[in-house]
Structures are given as C-alpha cells and as structure tokens.
Length: 274
Image 1 (cartoon, rainbow, N blue to C red):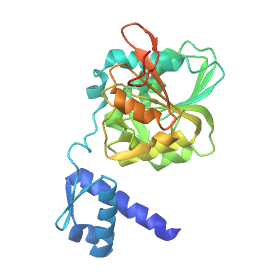
Image 2: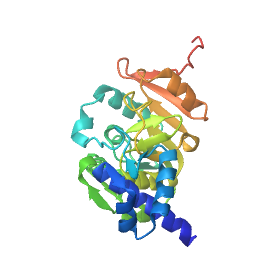
Image 3: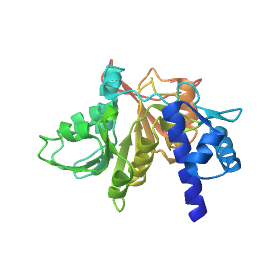
C-alpha cells in the first residue's frame, strides 16, 4: 500500500510541475522527487497513456489547452442564459428536507439561487459563492467545508476540504467542471480541484452533473467523475448530440433545459424521431 501511495504522490507532483512550467525534464524531476530517471520515465509514460502529458525526448510537456483554468469572472458571462435554465431545472430535482452537495462553479451558483425558495434543506458546499447566495435563506442550513482558498474559482480545496467530507452522505451531489466527454467524464485543469470534486461526489448517493454546451465534448487535464459514476446530466439544447448519445450509453440520464422556452425539453437520441 505504501508503494502505491508513493507512486500516486510522485505522479501528482509531476503533473503539478508540468502545469506550472509547461515542461519538465527527467533529470530535474528525478532530482526534485529524489528518485531515479528510470522511475520518472515510467511515471511520465503512464501519464502520457492517460493523455495528461505529451512525452518528449528527455521529459514531457503539457498537452495544448488542457491546463488553462478559467476564472470565475471569465466563466460568469459564458452561456449565462443556459446556466440559469440548467440551474432552474436542477432545482426541481431537490425537495424540502433533502441534503445536497453543491460543488464550485457558475452553474452550481445558478442552482443555489433557485434553492432559496425551499423551506427546509441542508446544503454542503466548498463554494464561497454558493454559501453567500444562501446567506439570507433562513430555512437552509449551510455546511461549508474547510480547505485552501482557490481564489480563481472562489472555492475551498485540498486535503482539509476532502477530510471534512468523510462520513457525510447526502442525497445528491451537483457538480460542474471545465469539460465533459464520454471517454473521460467530467474534468478540470487543476489537481487539487479535481481531488476535492471527487470527494464531493463520493459523499453523495447520486451524482448530477450540470454542464452547458460549451463544456460538452471538451477535455481538460484532470478527471473528476467518470461517466460510469454519473446518474444524471443536465445540459442545454446546443450540446453536441453525438457526445450526449455516447454519454447516455453509460446509463446517464440526460435532461435538456431550454433557456428560450424556460422549460425542459425531451432528450431524443440522434437519428430517433421525436
């Protein structure tokens, strides 16, 4: 078990170095980790097989576009109407008396704003924005995780956040991310955010992913929740139908929120008449 933990820790540190610098060498990483270049080469090969790095002669580089983590300000204006519709539809999945988990993100924030009408609810979150949105909702008990503040997304992440979730069991976890594909599931560019999101998902009976069309078919560096662990996806009509079909093949229930009509649209598989 100790060997497995050391391997996982090595690879986490390697990915952090690649994310910060864009490139790493075998010699430098061996020095940083206090191990052999052969071990680092084996780790880089494993990470390359997962699509997290691209191997180069003597090291590795970050695949183009996988590491950029948009800030809250950048994401707040993207697909705003779609996010509001997704939040409104997702709110109908929650009943008074439920206990739910809300991860960080502008779409989960849209959901939080819809929940203020409920008379009784327990919300566990690592998002400072979600907590603030529910501040005046006297009927909602808010449990905020501990953790390290990640200012770019206004959220608490890291081992303290993960530890605070142990022993909890909520009805549903509502999560967002930076990308969602059938092949890799939900993903985010940052390792600490990904680890915290996995802990959020593990603390709920069901995982509901909230993702507008700009996330569907996009892949980023760190996997958080594979499609096989998702129960439902709430998205909008502009999402790639072929990608949705592939996600649905994993048994994920797909619901479409229409921002124009303000209602839910029926999901019809491509090639199947409605």
